[in-house]
Length: 252
Image (cartoon, rainbow, N blue to C red; front, side):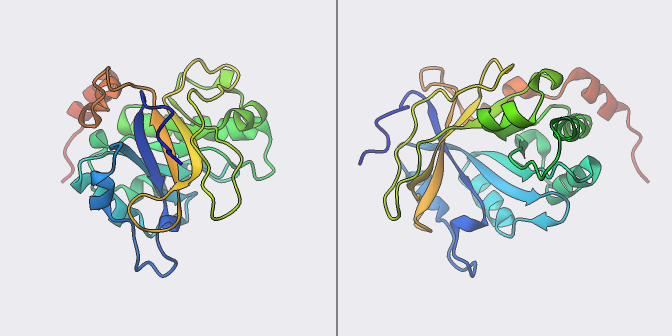
């Protein structure tokens, strides 16, 4: 099966967590093989952690390797809607301590409802967004899927965001692979555009570790000369953030 006979006009990416390596942590994806893959892997999303108490044990290695091979990197953090937004975002930023946040595009993973109301989930997300805007000067991408957003979020009460939306075919039985879903994904009500489409969850693993891997497509074409090294150009910190950083007094 040719996995790359659809979506060819969209930049290709993958996303990884500790589950893309062996259970004992000894076998990990080979990033040199990822760099050599065709079509070229242009961007990579890496799970940083969950809520306030979990750090993905593979994140530090994946981040180091992804930067080494020059990928556009998107660290993502899974939000628990019943937990403190401040505590969760402190944990997320703590995982990224020492990193240049102007070189990373942060992502919030919204796919858990944990018995919470639509209002509570929306309020928790808004609080997380405000914290990251304050700390980084821009909103993160939000990962979810249209059906979940329509049920558990009030999109009209959110700021204008970049969305990473999952929509893929029903999985085939192991060990079969499932082909990519054609872009674009279905948009949630009240959302006008998508940035990334997660097109497959059981596609062939790239890099020699594990059997399956998630595939993604960026809403940009090769003809648009999409360049991962400039993937943050349209999301530079806002002027208020820049002014605030310049006027901060140095710590003694």
